Length: 116
Image 1 (cartoon, rainbow, N blue to C red):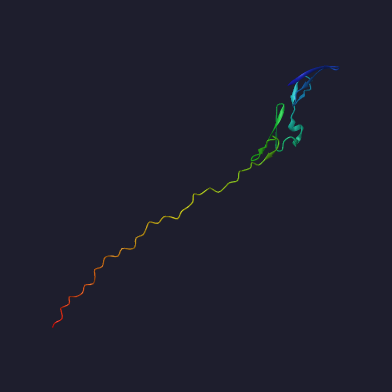
Image 2: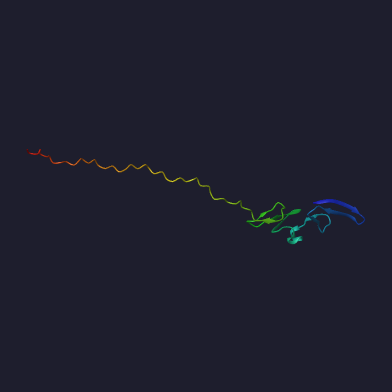
């Protein structure tokens, strides 16, 4: 990833792009390991070196924040108890008064007419 070749008082030299360093041959460029170079100052938890740059990561259950450097535990929305439908008292079938068996009127013994 040579960005430019410069001619100067001491001869030709090369310049590397961001994330690269000039190799010992002074012609080619090598990836700079930003994670090793900067220690733990770039990322809060994990630093992953990629060609020409780096990325931060987080250890589960943490997630990467919008700043792409820090981590936080995910915020769970508050849980509400499940909504139960209103309960009504059970409907009892109507009850009829108990049915008594019919009773016959008492039978009176026949009475003889009085003797005169």
